[in-house]
Image 1: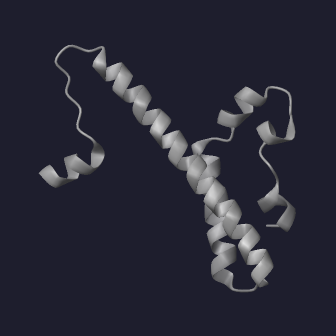
Image 2: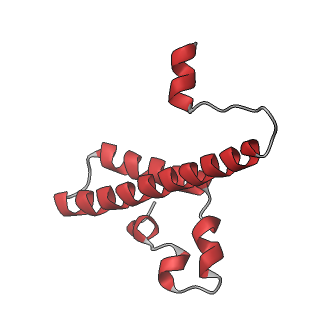
Amino acid sequence: MSDQEITAAPAHERGVEGADESRDAESFEAVVERLEDVVAQLEGGDLTLERSLTIFEEGVRLAREGARQLDDAEARVERLLSRGAGVATVPHDEADDEE
């Protein structure tokens, strides 16, 4: 993957038409895929320190974006389930403790 592909700003940051939609258009799957590319490049060890830092910064942005999308999805599920009668939810980490 080229340097340009890793550091390209998302559409919503470039002022692309439909920017509000573009923020979510970078799907969770796309974020994870790009993050995997970033990790592979960093693990390769063939980068200069400065390039490694730039790619690491991109990885941090991607990780935060992925976490935001997961939080949004969890909130949507909670809203949907709260409308149902008698449905109780437990946070994922607490559900693991019960097993």
